[in-house]
View 1: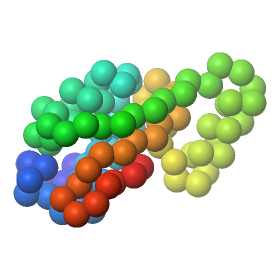
View 2: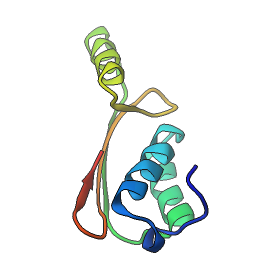
View 3: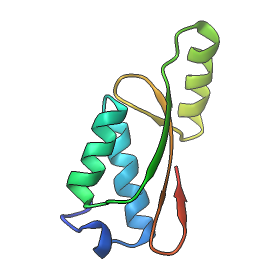
View 4: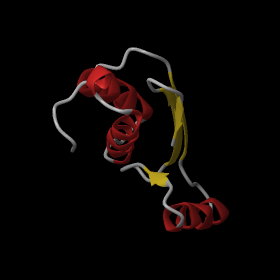
Length: 92
């Protein structure tokens, strides 16, 4: 974890790192949204898409996502997110 900085005190790069950490250590979309609000003080819109692999093809895709540095949540879901930073949209 970076520190106890709030969203307003962080740079866009720090926001990206903090949000990535929250997503990969969460078990549900609701938890992600709540933690970003509570831990970072972010009140804007967060676009979050998750897919839990339920067949062999999706499990193979998850392995690829992991190998290229993508995000996988604690519940095994592949995740993508977008939110607004201070200067631009932040995509993960």
